[in-house]
Image (cartoon, rainbow, N blue to C red; front, side, top):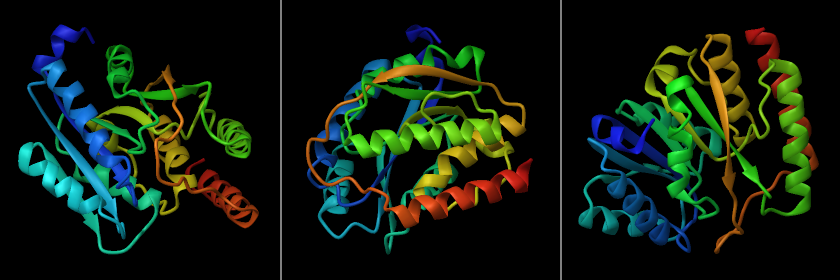
Length: 238
């Protein structure tokens, strides 16, 4: 899509957030500046506050008083990344749906890169160029992507990249998402989209170190359980 065409389209942009008080204010400034500059016909920014115990919700509410396009959707308790993404997907109302992690590791202006592929695809998956995470997270992410590709034929470089763009019809038409845990939700949505014959495209994105806050990692037990869940998903939709 050419930049001049944005004025004819609407976008729901959502972000999961858990204890991101160190990042969320600046993140909101950046993403709303980007979306305003692109001059969409209309847009909304949904922050899925996943039971944060810090000031994340307060910061978002205060920001929304300045910009009513920003809304907060709060889980009373922490439900995990998968549930936060599902809340975002199913609360989005506009023609296109994008999501990004709220920790500031992405350059939100690169949403233009995602939109550059959307005319020839139904969803566009980012992949992190020079991923700025601890080595074990990088290794685990690579292995998870390879397993997902083998089981579901996805052919993507980075199944868990936290910056993606969808036509809303993809979310409306695929089988209802079931995953609750973070590791499973991205393979599930891509596998169900592929099963429904939607076309997937990819684009490389800049990845930066976290500005603050703490990322959550997976221990060996979680990795093993996730792998078993992936096999169950494969059996269910094969």
